Image (cartoon, rainbow, N blue to C red):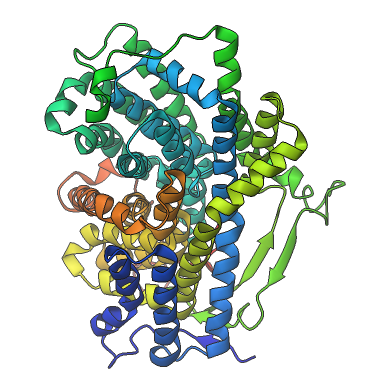
Length: 585
């Protein structure tokens, strides 16, 4: 098949008119969600709109656009849907065994106040899961735990989404920054340090933001010391690890420090009043029955198994082993646990072109079926171990799993449709058109570079994917405008974290975890302002770094060496060309 080259200004050669047309699928999706249309219908309507725009406006071959949608749907089911399914499976096991009631009482023993519980689970514990797994796992786990503790469903979803922001750039053992370094050719340690000089500001702010959103300003002021301890300890650790070690363990170490610091602080400080929801006020001082240590430990084991399995599955050594070992030294699993499928009509048949990339290159389209090393598989194994420990037999575990599948089947369809829309948009170049419109903002580009990252995550559902999509564009535009490319590339990943709470994938995960299937539009309305406001604040910080603060506050690339010839004075060498973007991780 003849390769097809993307065109980024198909409407009268005007990038802004083209961007408006490219945004139609997003407008359709979010518009129908806001009108209370069920998420799977909204996603399908958005997908149809995207397909029509891709074929009729961008002139993408119809078969190619269809296979891009298939590729996205497959990715939506594996790995994303697999994570959601098994996270809810663990939760269902703990509820059926009665262990979740014990977990609730043990958390209430630490702090009966709902505000403190939100800090521990939505912010600190969520950051740990983000660092180990990412890709929707922390929202699923945190929201499910909060709803089980008695939080109102909408607020449980909302604060889980808001809490899953500041840690996202370092999620899944640094995957977003690893992808960003791969696509831009910029030094990984500089990108890690740059993000680590932007995000700690928001790591400090987000705990306060969560409690203000949940309970109001006055109630937030009553627990400001706890917010400061949770956010401040995470922020300091985030800065130190990202600048002096690298991106791999930033979230995991930061989350552990934050949880330990907050638990120790609670031993010497407690809020003057216990905050509960209105319907709970009569029980405000009741922490539930006491349990012996053995029962509490047993009740927490599912979450211990989850943490251990997820962390192990996230390490490169374990992942390589499960995928069959290194290419030069394959193990007994080689050939059985990983299968790569090239997507017909699509693989290497879409060509990206300048200015999105430095030179024309073909885009691979491969779906990897690495069933054993998927994060969702680690959650499944954690669930099985938890069920066996709780006394369930294999047949009963299968029945629980079947009920979980029935519970989330519509949501899995929604996730598949959402990712199909995103992959079609990416393959056709619609998202690149919107990115180029942002890049045309001139002197305001430092602000909009963060908003571009926000848009990328809102569209793709992944900070890693957004970095692959727009990382090269951020570098090229920075060089054209005389800006620091380290800063604009870091802006993409740090602005992107604020788009995580409104991407369709996260909305569906949150709705499933809180048993609000069909209410994705309500959750979107709840968090949209927070997402936009925090993204704009990131943009303002990036603008200050670019235009106001001293240049040495941000890592700098060394000056390009001068090119000397015998016939002419030295001249500054042209920037090196970018490597072809790496596939999303």
